[in-house]
Image: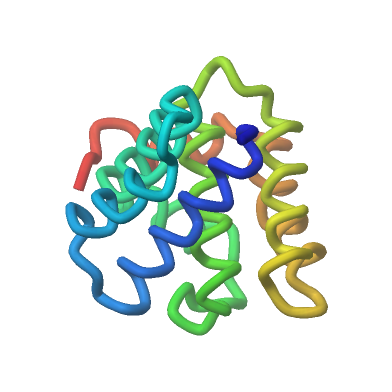
Length: 144
């Protein structure tokens, strides 16, 4: 299993929590069962899910700040969760280059989203990575 597959698994968990109202603990338990022996990527998926959920309010403020024409609740559920996870990587995972986070998010959008998801996700994330310091104040000190 690769980091990409870990991102896919993390997206599935975030979707379950966001759309289905799943309990994060139960979703993690099911995710852990699905990973079996692949602990390295299990931990990466757990980091993405836990970090995204822990910082959800701050991440959503960033999305709202950049997507002035799109209310976050009107975004496609898959796109919203892909963007959230990518923003967690961008603002909290210093070892992952922005370009990797954006490219992985776009690929997830192409695979799991609608016809325009890849371009939509790229547009939102592209604006943020052009000037991340503009959005960092929305993130700082705001674990939810």
